[in-house]
Image (cartoon, rainbow over all chains, first blue to last red; front, side, top):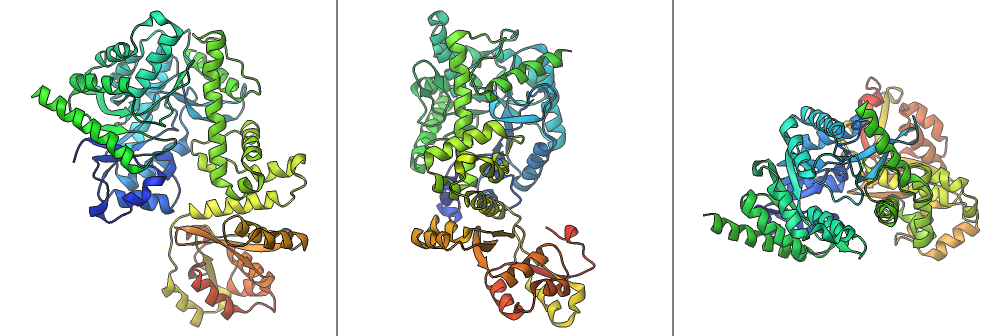
Length: 292
Length: 265
């Protein structure tokens, strides 16, 4: 079994609900935690069945770890219940905010999106406190993922890679390094400022700025190039610049970092995901030979 | 103080996402058209999420309205009643009342109750898993009905409407033709329904008035004697029990000493 996993989405449940010997041979599956917060039902039963043959990684999209108002007690309790049910190999979420009040003193809303946080000392303290709260409740370290962000703040004082490394140092969390997000951000920066340099080189520099031991998982996905803006839509095969960055990352971080093929919109037949996973596995094997 | 600055910054972006007009908040590194494009990416994502989440929970309403009108309804509800939780399966509770308040939808007065039925189906399919505890039904043979209650399976939901919501639901889910639904609407026929799990899926069953009254009493935790009184003289327990067992409506029988709220799995 490889270290390559795929995102398990509803159109592919039937493949993983098959007899054990007929299930896809992938290293692990990753699901969005929030899709399994129900008390019961078919999706949860499929996931618990998958757990019998595969490692499961729980990847959240809703904690809003960088929210200045804090994280939602209810959400954290739902996650803790799911962690107890599934016993996942990893638990992760994003370095973003999602919760904020509607107007001054209004009710707290959830954006249902991964909104950018500022890279300031105060934002780092907020993120650390929220991550530590989650880790204390779950009794385990989590992984925190870097964002694809379409907006940023004047107030930023930390380089993003240093900010995340410091988060990991202070909180004890690991990092989930999304290489597609790095390329999307670098492509957008280049379009904003053609003098910004080669996007893949910029993304490689980001990887190099991280202590390798902090990276516990890598995400690979496709993006959508809309000309004026590149969007992280997880709706296509991994693009060539991301594969190039993956080769670099494997050389820098080690050839066996668990790696996920993410595909969330226009989900294709399973064979397409397995083909992408096979390519990632081949690159890991190649990196392993080079490292030997 | 610094936390307050971050809170203000985040609230400003949240407000820009919720506002009718797309105006970037202050303090962004991006300026002008680039800031509007960035904000637009988040706003477009929110609209797409609203449509997908509401479609998943209210498929019958979506089929009735058509893609374009349903998408507009989803976006309007998102602005009026945005999510407060990170689990989008829970967003959209307010849709039935929102539909009732929307004057443009007055020509389709059954829409709100169809939405209530869709929500009941979605809730039922996400309810705790529980099989009928057949052994507990032996209590029915020997105990005083004044001291017994019958519990419906988790997720079971009863609805009564002045419109033929079960027939309309079936017409949009392959269980009846649209002509039957149109005829039921033309006849002004209301329907009372039970939504209950059959395997992993929720089944919508039309109930007659005595069965509806009986099950409504059971759902409220009434003792059998009180439920029988509520059902009235036309209720036939044996026939109902056969149907209930065949369709898996029942969870278990229990003595009155067990408080209903303590007995859910």
